[in-house]
Image (cartoon, rainbow, N blue to C red; front, side, top):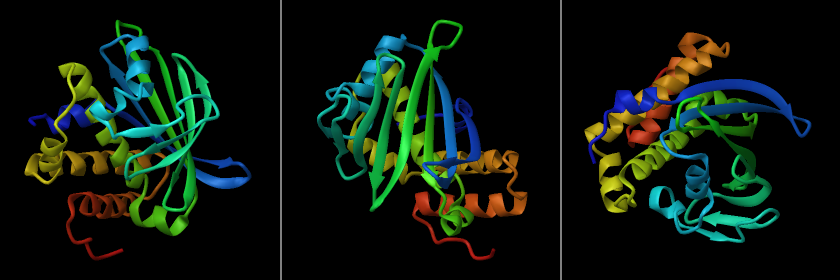
Length: 216
């Protein structure tokens, strides 16, 4: 699998903010990307149980409003809003914790569709200080990349090839670039540059399967 890490990382607009959610302090990670397809096709790729595994993970459950879903080996949750073909909100339950995910689709003003993904997580200050927004942001960048490659090719990606790519120099370059981009978004949100860069370095090491760098 050959991709241009700079081009694909640069296709995503990243934002980081803080807010109160359900009475608790929370961090918000937002990724926005345009896709060269119709809003109906993009919605179907995001919500059709037969198409989701072609770019993300196998999914099971009751994929309708109020139903529950489960991604194989990953998160599950409840579908809390479903307004085809523009808005989907779910709880994101993983590792004993719950966060909240919303995906909104809109016309991009040209001939494609804009996807805006918002992930709200309860504030765990120690975890945030250690990894920053890239802890979830890099994972979503990988998901958005898979979606882009699938829509461009019109065929499901080879999961074994994707796993091999993730451990290759090219795959690691993509994940480092993604992590650094989330670090820059954190700086724009007010995080001290040294702290944001250190967190990004730790996130890069985690995703690349490398030893965590020492230092603050």
